[in-house]
Length: 489
Ligand SMILES: Cc1cc2nc3c(=O)[nH]c(=O)nc-3n(C[C@H](O)[C@H](O)[C@H](O)COP(=O)(O)OP(=O)(O)OC[C@H]3O[C@@H](n4cnc5c(N)ncnc54)[C@H](O)[C@@H]3O)c2cc1C
Image (cartoon, rainbow, N blue to C red; front, side, top):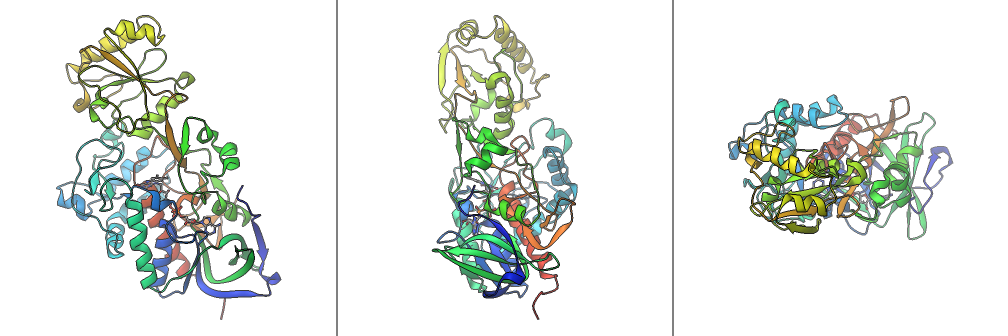
């Protein structure tokens, strides 16, 4: 649990309000930044209460991908045909438990959201990185960042690349995003209270959230919200107890949970204390990219029975989820001399290489003949550019027939996985926190990693969905809150 008790307090009991603001925003990562900017631009006074000594949160650690489409400037510059409908179809097909209303507005508003981000100073160039990679090592913007070209999604929506990375070589673009959003917020006179840990919400007699409590250097303060409070306090990857309760696979020895120490679930706990509920808490983004080199996508993933189980051209967290689901979590990536390369991220060890598939089969203790049958079958169809069992795209089909044959360790317990939580508060499409009867708790909003929207699990994830939805639903929270009747004269 986070290190301070979290409470819901009654406004009538508060005698010493420290200050009053139209909107109070808890946390200044991607979601909080966009809520604060949007609200300030609408003329509201905004105070961000941030636990860190500076801005950024986990967003600052991110690559800086945004999942956006429907014909953005960058897509058009590269001759990519996309539409809001195709983006909607893809996200509906790819998300395990899709909320059509949210996905509809996210897809419909995607181009205008991209333009808004640019107006706020988030830089995207018109470059397009065309190789298969978990993140472009260049500063080019566009990349295929999900399962768009992978079966079965390629059949359900017209594929288009929608991963938009902020202009920055390789990883670390999230810091550029936050630096620019931070400057915009300061220019708009958004106020900041740093080193301030929010540990309580305050409701009035009618049940509306009208303020919050925070602690700073041992002192406690009460702030009054004239319109609303937006919780934008991140996920819970670093709260071992919450992880153990909801998604223990993230606590496994082979997993490196990513985030900042403040990803301790306090945002979710604030919402729960106010009567909200959390959903998809068992779901995580858990991955172990074996590409690049992209030649490895031409290899095959097999389980302890020597059988394939997934199209290897899937987005890396989809194939990782499939590996984890195999009996005993055992999975190997098999390739031949023509397709072998050392995984750049070094998450999978090379087990060994053998002159024949038969020898490999014995060394891996696979049932006799199984791997040989699998490879013979695969090769026979790969020659024809077909993959009738797993439907890997023809671009990645190549017979594995050049010895030596190598096996890379992809088993859950024996290779390295990394990830973060995806569950969060149940919210409406306008980011209102919903209670157990699915009624909005007036005056309370949540966005970003502490809320559950489109990103739900690794099988349906596309890079950029978290920051894309954090920024978008952060703005929707601010817009909706702007229309609320003020609580103060
Ligand atoms: C290494 C890495 C790379 C990633 N890359 C991408 C990517 O490229 N694209 C993508 O879409 N997603 C990516 N993700 C996921 C994504 O970064 C997060 O989901 C997203 O940044 C969350 O944004 P947020 O605004 O909700 O939270 P954060 O950015 O974490 O901001 C939350 C803020 O709230 C503050 N806070 C927390 N508790 C309190 C409290 N009680 N009181 C006051 N303040 C509080 C924190 O200090 C923090 O500043 C990545 C994640 C990791 C770990």
